[in-house]
Image (cartoon, rainbow, N blue to C red; front, side, top):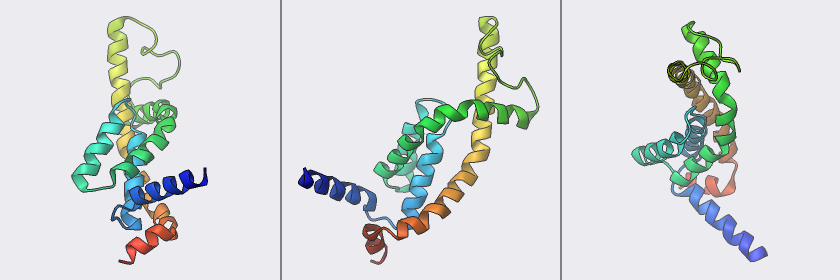
Length: 154
């Protein structure tokens, strides 16, 4: 049992290091977490993979942060819709009795499209500062991790 945990720690450490500095890893984790809160289901995993490959980021780390944020994705949908509705000062404040849940099929389709647009706009406003704050908060923490500190010294 002890050998298995040692091997697992070595593998995870290797995935996390993969030639990145603590600051770049902090940015990767922050991006993964912010994208994991994207208010539309099914998109964050693919979006994280595309961004990681496009910018040469650590794919396992960004996906791990994405999956860690997944419960928040569900919890933040209604607040994002409300914030977006407030930002645009149009339409109803979304609650349990909105056209999204009641009304004709056409009303539900239009209301759900508006709600998705509001949620996406609110996420775009919140995601940037979230990435900055998480990057600045995680960098000093990751610099104290011995495996990462030895990598940044090279």
